[in-house]
Amino acid sequence: MVNYPLLLKEIEKEIQPLFSKGKVANYIPALSKVDPKQFSMTIQLFDGTSYGVGNQNKAFSIQSISKVFTFTLALKHYGKELYQRVNHEPSGNPFNSLVQLEYENGIPRNPFINAGAIVTTDSLTSIHKDSTFEHILNFIKKTSNDESIVYDNEIFHSEMANGYRNMALINMIKSFNNIHNPIDDVIKTYFKQCSIMMNTQQLAQSMLFLANHGINPLTNEVIITESQAKRINSLMLTCGHYDASGDFAYKVGLPGKSGVGGGIVAVVPQKMAICVYSPQLNSQGNSLIGTKALELFTTKTGLSIF
Ligand code: DON
Image (cartoon, rainbow, N blue to C red):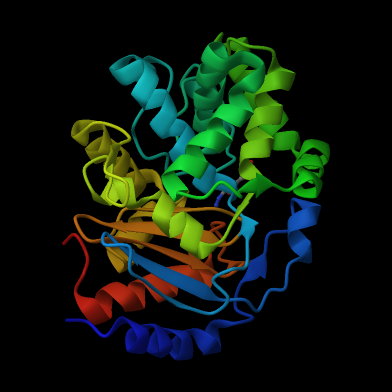
């Protein structure tokens, strides 16, 4: 039996020399204001027990981690039909890259790069219209078993004011007829979902269904089918860290999803979900210390999928 409290303390100690090696995201001005020297980590087990280190109550902007929730909702509704609009291959490119999209006729490589998430958000907008964001937020509240989750209005407006690349992406995709709703509505929902604030405890709980064949083990609620849970985990493994997905799989060996807010969520099938937060990023936009902490976790416990 692993002594999780001790393990987490060891990890916290071992990551200390890495502070100052990364950089907080600054292309969204509101994100650049966070204290760079933060580290928290939560391990959430199926029986409701959790273990943590650092300030696990500190909420941060989930950013691209939101793409897991919107993909889950879109896959649940559209099934395989969704793959006509967004592929399921790694991109090998940065999260906000435009180049591939033109070669590939406006079909994003996968739902975890910005282009792909914008398409899944558009697909949800076709169903829920004006209440799409509320629908996404309610789903996140349900999977986290927490009604208190909100989005940050300042971060939302900061992204709206500075999201030039995302505007370029959505316009390019629209030119290939792969956006079916008004651009303004879709991009607003996309930026709002990125601005949702959660802490490591809430995020670790929210992903438990992916570790348990699509069923939330804390409530026994069926969130998605076993087969869909398999697909989402596969895509997290192959695409969850953009052009660093291979490196994350190599070092950590777990399905995971990062966000430029500094969070990473990882899934240990049939066992647990883990969330780590540390806002200094590596050059590919993933938490530098978060990646190291997860690498230490799987190395020390042997709990990887390989
Ligand atoms: O759209 C963006 O650029 C951000 N709202 C989200 C990007 C992101 O989190 C990439 N993750 N590492």
